[in-house]
Length: 66
Image 1 (cartoon, rainbow, N blue to C red):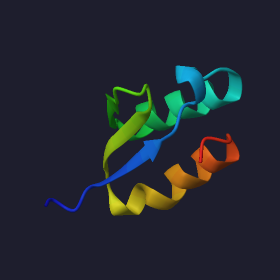
Image 2: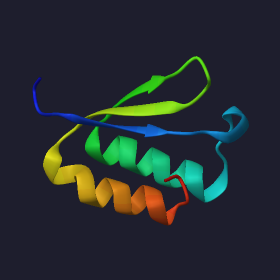
Image 3: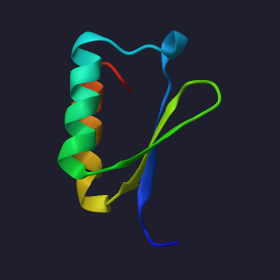
Image 4: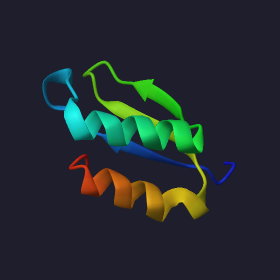
């Protein structure tokens, strides 16, 4: 396709709180990512450029989302 990446996040019981929520919001707003929710209440971050892969995964891992 267009070379954009995506990142799927498993969400336990469909809820994100505290530092996880803050980190997720920061990543979505900073990189202006498209977000999709799955029928199982998981999250897919879309339209990630290759240059953004490392900082996004680092931030999400530090917050415990990966």
